[in-house]
Length: 122
Image (cartoon, rainbow, N blue to C red; front, side, top):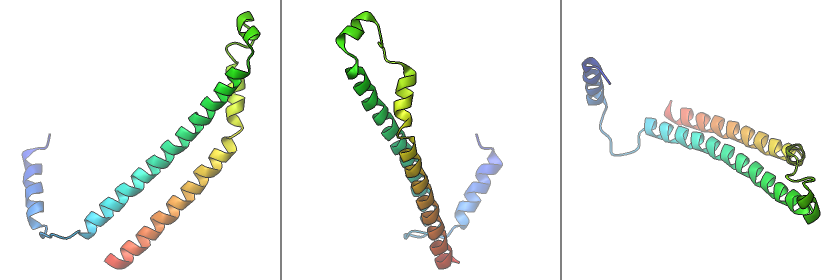
């Protein structure tokens, strides 16, 4: 909870800001920063979704490949977690490349935004 002095300072500060119906430079910067934050979160979620989807597909394939007799006898049922991890590790290189490409594109886009923003608003 804010103290009374903080509230007075905030009201005083807000009264000094000029009123504008248009988008301000600060508003543009905040919105662009939020877009970059959510883009990074979306990229992270996409890579995790892709990894889990591949792992589930491979797990289903490995479960289907176990014959009915092996299921009844208890051999290879449930499939080894080590086997599933090995199956998942095959595509780790592809996911790492996607993550690196997204990382560098993010840095380039962020740098370009700052160059344009500060060139216009300096």
